[in-house]
Image 1 (cartoon, rainbow, N blue to C red):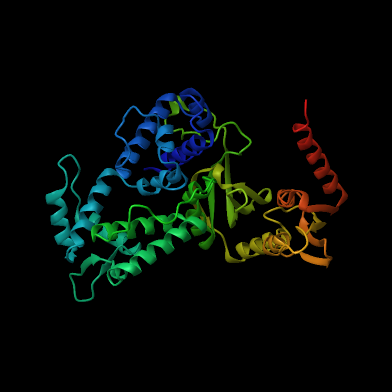
Image 2: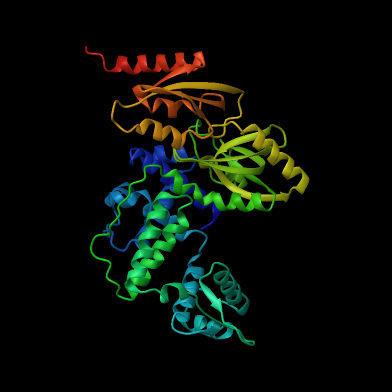
Amino acid sequence: MAKESFDKEIQFLRMLVLTSGAYNRQQYADRLGISIHTFDKTIKRLKEVVNSVYQQLPEDKGKEFAETIRYSYLDSSEPMLLFLFRAKSLKESESQRLSLLLAAMREKSFTAMELLDLCCSSMPEELSLPDEKTIRGDLKYLEQVGVIKKESGTRPFRYRIYNDLVQQLSRDELLDLYDFVDVMANTQIPSVQGYLLRDGVKKYMNRNQVDYGSVEPFLYKYHYYSRILDEAHLFTLLAAIRHRRSVSFLYFSPKKETSYTSKNTNPLFERDSEGQQETLLPLKVVYDHQYGRWYLLGHHARYGIKKYRMEGLTQISEEEEAPVALFESKKDELEQRIKHSWLIDTGKPVLVRVRFFHPGPHIPSFVMERVLLQGQWGTILEESEESFIYEIEVNGTIEIKPWIRSFGSSCEVLAPLKLRQELIEEWKEIKSYYESF
């Protein structure tokens, strides 16, 4: 799939899972900035991917895609969104060709020319036949991602499936490996590679008739879908940072009504985009575990340090390479600006002082445990049997406020006075919602 199409389907899936299919076709199209015809084509493409990846789903072509999402509730947090990564950037001919190559090399090793002959004799008639250059390109790609291995020896080189690890493991070791990868993929970031590895291990066990039982030991429900969807951009941006390259993208602020627009490829139908074209030297990627959001931080030629929500990035492309001295200076500048950020705030430093209350006598203080675990660089100034005072210097109070609020009645803001007053007003508003009529 082309990058443009992948951007569109990411935004489509995000809206679908956040609204539970509440929009009609016209509302979806308006929100995406596309026509209803393009919307219908997107639905059709997604159904095709779902049917090819999830053979166990009902073969109901008329089923609404929202129902497909809800069909397996526990799976909806990852595989239903993850399948885009499996379908990304593979044309039908590439998918068929790679499948043939991998199936052949599973049994024994082959040379490039032997694999070319095999592909030419096995490809469906409606698909174009590959040449030697194409096959060698496929083998280079598969070797780079660690799927196949070039055997030692003289030319012509032979290639085979690289699954030495799983072949050397016993049944119990395979089960332990699967459980470990499953836990890590669902609790750590980034997660997409973990899910793909987990599914690969599971397929290997199924092929070798390793009984995993009817019920898997771990079930997860992660509510922040952006965590997985935005990983589509993560490695592109990390590669740009590693190579000191600027990136160009069309950005849609979360505050805007539209979240995507198709590329203007036909001048007869050209229209203004609601997005903002940006060029940035990326310096850092930050993940907010509290809200499940990814952020891109970088240097803008006109505005200096800028921050973007990754869910608003579309049509990303790499630009020219920045000089080492410039990149390092801007990176140092960013680190200084966010030195006291709770997350990514670059506002003026402010001292926050909070009194936290212990849960009660003879009860382990889970409040202090949480503050020590999550309180970053803050310090505990004093402690009594009833409470303790925590202090931290942060760049503004916007980002730390939700964390403080999450403690409810177990804490009291002492300073700054403005933050204390803001929380008082918020709790008064909440109280008014629950007053009797």
